[in-house]
Image 1 (cartoon, one colour):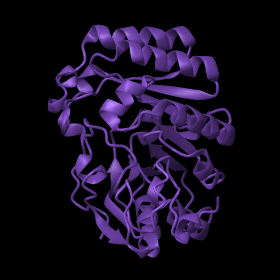
Image 2: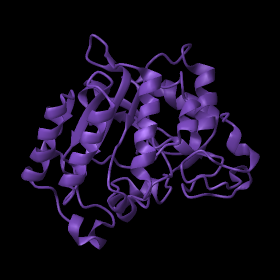
Image 3: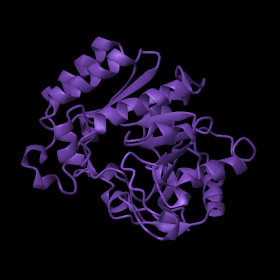
Image 4: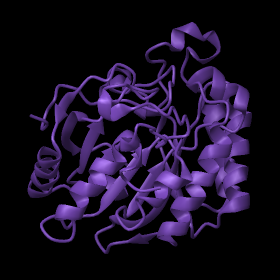
Amino acid sequence: MTTDSYYDGNCMLCPRMCGVDRIHGTRGYCGASSQIRVARAALHLWEEPCISIGRGSGTVFFSGCTLRCCFCQNHTVSHGCFGADITEDRLAEIFLSLQEQGAANINLVTATPYIPQIVRVLDKIRGQTLTIPIVWNSGGYERVESLHCLDGYIDVYLPDLKYHDPIRSERYSDAADYFSIAIEAIGEMVSQRGEYRFHENGALVNGVMVRHLVMPGGRHDSIRVIKALGERFSEKQILLSLMSQYTPFYRSCDYPEINRRITSFEYRSVCDMVHEYGFSGYFQEKSSAKEEYTPPFDLEGVL
């Protein structure tokens, strides 16, 4: 697959493989057209310490998403496609502006529908005027073939691995094949980046860090997720960020079993499994389950 392959009227960038003609205005499952759409571009202080490293990650929130998580805290952007259409030249300016503001990296959030445009932008400025690392921050639901297009462009992959159970992934994110797709995508990311590496200032400058959000009633599924990672990857190949910040956002109220925050017992059970496999990384404090950690989507830094 080439970076421009979706322009042939048959978009196959994500695992949905809608096959729609985006260049002529048709929108597929993700909601994106051929135009880059961005909702926010600003320094973000609330990523893992090795991503923000005190001064902030230069986070660019792209509009649209290949998943339909009923608890999504960014639903106005991911599902509602809120944002402003911009050119590739403007996206390049945004990257450079974030670097000038002192960003530790350029953090691309849910950017899968825009892989061709992003690659073209990075071809123009990366390694020349843009010198900070590039982070690919995604839900993990990626085609390996599309990730091939990013090889050599991304320094740090930051995917989720949300579920193991296809019943849960279909019910809460409309993706019964989520685990089988995401575990192979993570394998490709590891293949591209190799062992993770930190700068002397503590910044993660190369590698893969997998995020997993512990959900209400999902303790056993979370344990299966950690086991699957432990059986496939070594503690030198991936870092793990175990998250306790689940908050019943958006349509969680439609699913009574997840319309609550997680318990300390649920979270500790999964933490124990992470320790058993010896993964390094981060354990989020339960106090992080607050709505105020969600950034405002007000087109800051976009126009």
